[in-house]
Image (tube, rainbow, N blue to C red; front, side):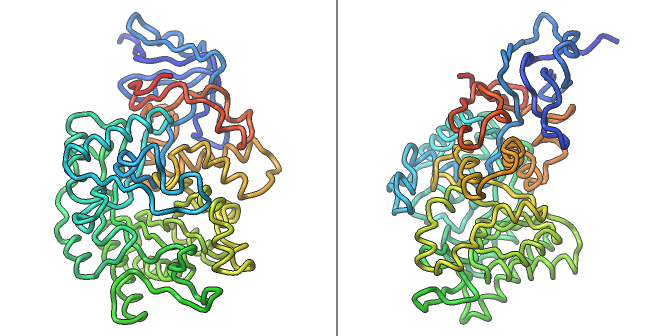
Length: 449
């Protein structure tokens, strides 16, 4: 039998597979038919090079798994870029108003975002909320017309990254009703033809708002004595809480992952109560997760670890809004928000994300922000590696795809990026200055600087 020949070989630089406790596994990587064929020393891949093999001399540059931004509104990003909601300010403003009004505009926005993300080494992302709940939305970036464009682009092979999406049966950052939610679940059809390219994994529920707007659902009043309500519709707090619980349990029984936008400690508690009930009735790990989780407390973190509930959060927002959160919550309570270090310590699969276009989709800046928020590290190299896993290994788990993406072990999809310097030899603060030189999706080069 003839020896296999690689389609692509990268050699002459550190290859960080993240497939085990040690990030670096060699200095060369070979790819065949979109999969990692071999990782090892340069000499280990020499016999895989044939006349048609593309050989990349890394010259000391580093290879890491492709970046996975697990919470990124790509269609909206494509409509607004280069603007973001925060802009250069310390708090989000109203943002630019550039609605997408036609199918062609939505298609163009998705493609524009894909080009931007490829330049950043992003090979996977999650669109956290698309569906009929936003068909009349003013942005035009989240309704069923967007779903149709994603499906068309996937069928045409034009997506520049793997896309996971959550269905949305209410308004983005707004209310939802149990009746609309149930109607949405009942209308779900079959899966997409290639879930490795486009996968509608579950549902998104907005439980509450955000602390700076005093709309996070909390156990205690805000500093001015006010109290927020859940966004899920109901006649009173008790009915709203019951409806949120019902939504989560019914999605779980339908075999759907649930991502709950929950920032207040009371909203997070309700989500965890519902997941615990659901798993008591049907014990299957569907990778449910809290989105944002600003006010999650130590007891809740322990419950999340026990229940397999993940956390998808944004360190850049924590850094930027610390003053505003302190003003509305009070300094003592605000001091305990966004507990990234504690989240990692209890073993929760933390996903760092950008929430673009709230912030730019630059994962290097988000890792630097997480490092700043967590404070000094005993081992800066270990800190950077840990935070890189929050953009590779952990999001693959959230996607339910850790058996085939997120690391560069042999047999995994060849989603990777080449960085101009070894990220494990720089500090997190220096990482934003490290260029992305190449992005490879399924063995295909989609960006080269």
